[in-house]
Image (cartoon, rainbow, N blue to C red; front, side, top):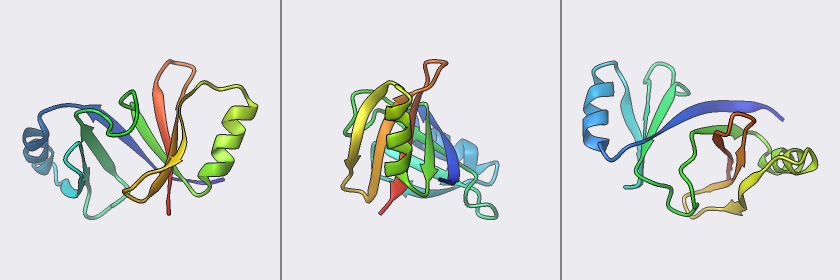
Length: 115
């Protein structure tokens, strides 16, 4: 299993303000579903930050997202090790398969893969 990218998720209602502020640092909007917006560096597209009011289909807002090349394998490893699954593995309408797991520090991690 390989990590493709790691994205901090900032819970915020100030989407427009964050787009403008991080735009000053060179970030550009690459995704906006209304409830989550992701900004990325044009020169290094995996350098990203997301802002979300709340998660659309999960009971909690994750602290970070980790995209992996095999989300099913990641899910199996976490379950085998007894990690706390906060949100079950499922396919989402926006083209990702994901689950949430709590890390040892109490942070919620959105582990995902694209279809």
